[in-house]
Image (tube, rainbow, N blue to C red; front, side, top):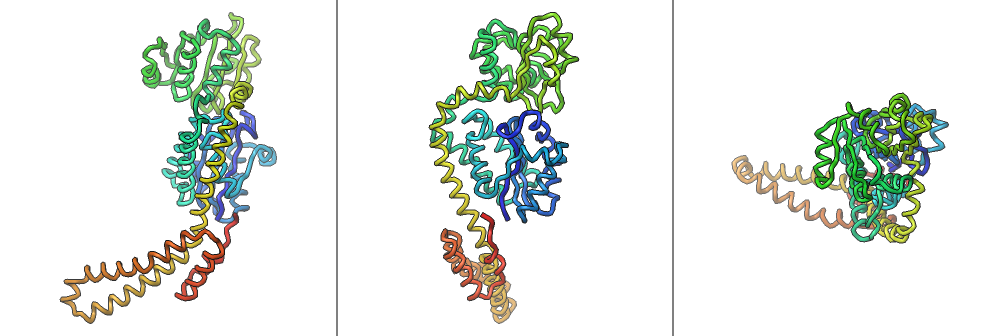
Amino acid sequence: MNIAVVGLSHKTAPVDVREKLSIPDDVKEKATSQLRSYPHLEEVAILSTCNRMEVYVVAQETDDGIRELTQFLSEWSQIPLPELRQHLFILLHQDAVMHLMRVSAGLDSLVLGEGQILAQVKQTHKLSQKYSGAGPILNRLFKQAISAGKRVRTETSIGTGAVSISSAAVELAQMKTEDLSAHRVAIIGAGKMSRLLVKHLLSKGANQISILNRSLKRAEQLAGQFQEADLKLHTLTDMQEVLSDSDLIFTSTAATEPLLDRDILEPIVCDRQSCMIFDISVPRNVHSNVNELSQVHAFNVDDLKAVVAQNQESRRQMALEAESLLEEEVASFDVWWRSLETVPTISSLRTKVESIREQELEKALSRLGTEFAEKHQEVIEALTRGIVNKILHDPMVQLRAQQDIEVRRKAMQSLNMLFNLNSSQGVAKQRNT
């Protein structure tokens, strides 16, 4: 068995590639089921955000599992495998473990230290459990990665004032306009990213903000968090009217197809000098053909890198502190991972001793007679179980806790020989670490 992660991110692929591999929450059940049907993939967890799409797996045979996974990604995205390979990264065991720890801590984000990714890792774990993707190994890995992400944010200052994708978009808008208070703003979407957009726009002085959303109730819930602001709320049926009266447009929805394209925008912008659009969604909410309109200046998540770079340097030292904490978390996970090698021996030992207990108990009860046996069987059963558990407790604890690989394996070999156990495969099997 081996842990692996295959995926791409803002570091390896442009947004037009990332959006083709996007796997939204509402289709993760289908994708997880398909991946679990492959013969060499035992466990699966899918992490899909605007800046990354990564699939964590536990594979029986690493090479075969990776081949099945990359073929799936090619078919899902409809990108030929030779073309897709240049954007993919593949990490195995300790590298895969460290990668998830870094992702959870915000160290691999476009915005160093951003907090939203931790919630996305939690959601990935929740859905992988719900859809029977994660088993004991990925469950343990994700729990430890989530704990590591929390620890980094508690024990370092990397999350203090950390900008998000939303705040970077607002900073870019401010750079392009100088005075946000003089511009009318429209936000399409009413989710978490839109809430952050409103927060940062208000902090930068914007005071003419309209929210467009498919559901008016969701927009009202967002506005309820900013009761001091005079937010105008609309459904998407008012989109043309609202956008006609807006200078700056932000889009942040879970739509899988563009909401804005040249045909929609052309009549809206035909009588104005310019209109700026900031699309922070993946898949993109704004079609690339809007750039054919001379009045439109469109920006997507990849255009935020220059803004983010200005904020990175001050947190690099904090990132170094975080890396040392993550090394401890990886070492802790590795101790647990290596302890799995003892499971076959422990299981065989317990099975054998339990079999002996049951046989001897049956003999004893038959000698005591039916009346006595029926009256006292429960007490005698509890007594014998207690004796077995106490005898096995110390050997099992010591075996699991032994960190020296050779000492642990010699101990397992001794137990197998002394008790004539049938767990030689579990002892001999070497993990690819």
